[in-house]
Length: 242
Image 1: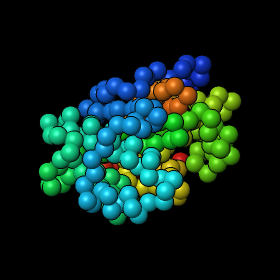
Image 2 (image 1 turned 90 degrees about the horizontal axis):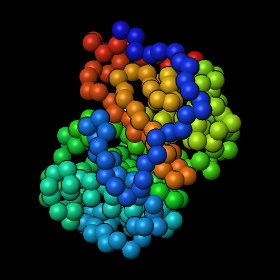
Image 3 (image 1 turned 180 degrees about the horizontal axis):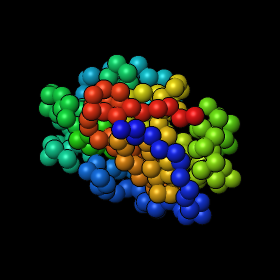
């Protein structure tokens, strides 16, 4: 079965659902938390020797955002598995995506995604592949400049490019989707995933999506239903966008 659909008409005037920072919520089986970065500045974060090694290898400008993301991720994992946050490690795979270790044991059944901007940080945890992404509405001009490389003409027609939150939402959806697939936004992956709706959000393939407005940022969450990859027996083909 072909899982790719053409972009459909949507209500361009509707706003994304507002979400207040600082609280955990569940959506579609995933746990999610988002916070303002300044609110995390003085909160204690215990790092393992392996995590401290990762921090030492980062440029100075990245360390604050990295630690803010891990603070939320450890809180989310600790709540989900009933473990002290001090027992939770969040370490990078070779492709850079995060994985969870609790009391020295990796937990491959838990999928984790982290996102951060200058003003906000978010983490999502799920029993299936998950991607989360934040995009500040102030980044809309930058998104507009690269939109042709990430969005097809049909998707651009779907998105109201005159509305900063719509452009931020489209970008966040694409990036969250490629994170769930453990791929990067700079390459062919974003064109293979088609935005078929923005309000409400919808994507091609076996994906579920939600978008919220968080202060002056847009937050997207994408979950991928387990199953054979596209093109394999039982896993319908997925065509790239035009």
